[in-house]
Length: 111
Image (cartoon, rainbow, N blue to C red; front, side, top):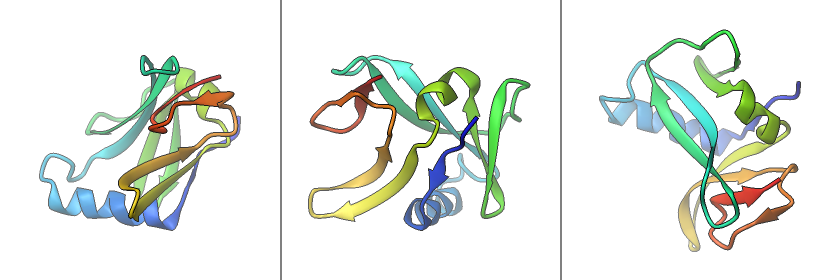
């Protein structure tokens, strides 16, 4: 099972959020794929204080953990998680080689 690649810019932003948001402190980043969005599936990011479950994939990065459930990993394998703060918007960006189609906003896809 392949992993998710997290860029330096994304790691820096994840660290910044963890340091400035008290609800995210000492939490793991959970990356999920959920049903919905204009293309069928959407990406969801959140901070989770719960430990990884038996079916979760754990990615160690810069002293913290990124957790992906097994079902989401089927859609995210080989994906790059990046962060952009350019003129076209600010936020996390998924570069997913498994996406057959993406929407204009980039937050949903079909596989």
